[in-house]
Image 1 (tube, helix red, strand yellow):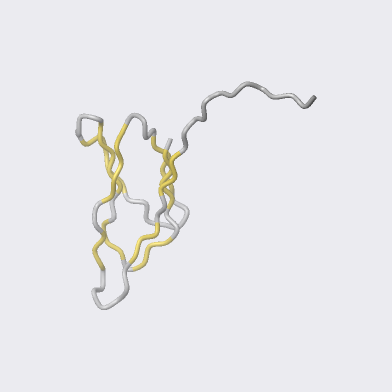
Image 2 (tube, one colour):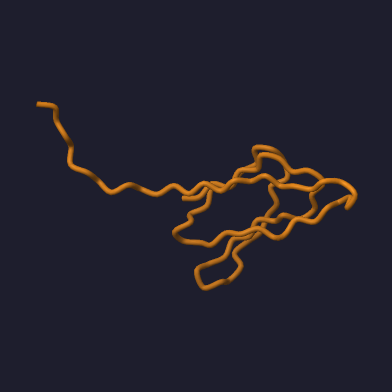
Length: 83
């Protein structure tokens, strides 16, 4: 699983999240416009990306803070006991 979480956007147009099938076909796209907007993605089944951001006002600083966190199952390990 993958989590895309918007922390902050400033002076940003676009920055659209895209989802693609493994064969490259576009499955969907959406924008996460507000802080804490998020998307949970099955990263084992789809590719995800983002379009370039474009400044609304080119004279202002522009950024999109959106970390992507990937969760993976850990292999099972035998239980241990304290002797």
